[in-house]
Image 1 (cartoon, rainbow, N blue to C red):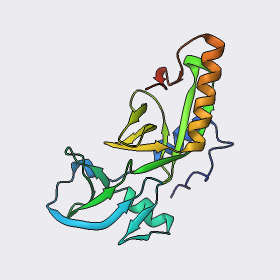
Image 2: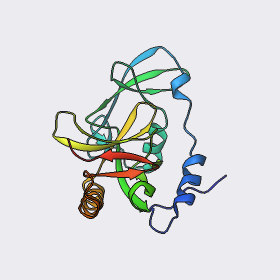
Image 3: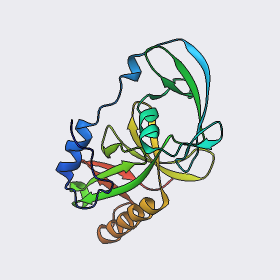
Image 4: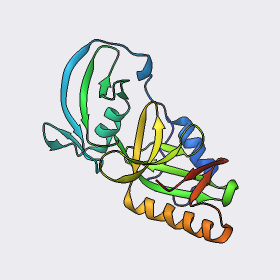
Length: 189
């Protein structure tokens, strides 16, 4: 059994983060198509807190387990899915929250790696874009994580990214935004 990545990205190289991300195994929820069974009585709040019947789920291992069987349907609903059942789960905004970030390089050579509140490790790039969107609660920065699931970038990481983007734009005269894996992500609405 491989050990999980440390709780912070600080001190990890990009290569180490990519290795941990590649080892992260998620259930093949996109290929499961069980019958709909009803409501799970669960909710994911916009601050990343998972609730069951209104009570916070405080065991991180349980939240990670549930997150591994989370899927977004084509109609926008979120469900928890196993080979045998599908239950709806309420999601206030994005189901995940970006809580940590590391940046290596600058300009078009930059690589941005992120950790979510459920332990997903994601390197921003063509398959995992950063987007500034208004989903009804003002403009927020989101990172595509997997499947049809996104993570909202938390305030501290957002400010770190904004500072990098502003510094780089000031130095180069380029638009405000950031590169990662050779892709430019504008940080303007």
